[in-house]
Amino acid sequence: MGRPMPTHRRRRFEAPGLVMRPDLSEIPPRAVPKLTLRGASLRDIFCAMRE
Image 1 (tube, rainbow, N blue to C red):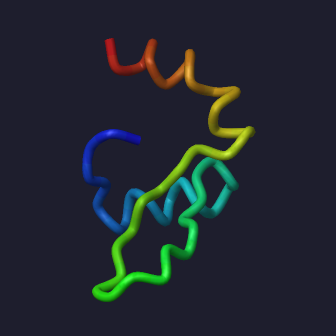
Image 2 (image 1 turned 90 degrees about the vertical axis):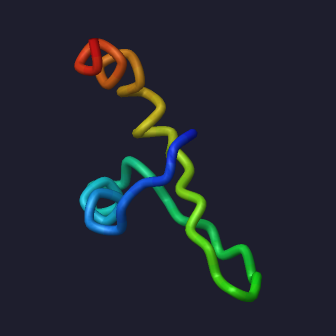
């Protein structure tokens, strides 16, 4: 994921397992969401929706 993602949007994608937020153990904490395998399988659909 390239651009910053608002918390409410990230949580909406986390719930069905499309993205995950790994624990980076940093101070201050930061969120760097990553696509799960399930999310990556939908990448083509997401890209088509963006067009």
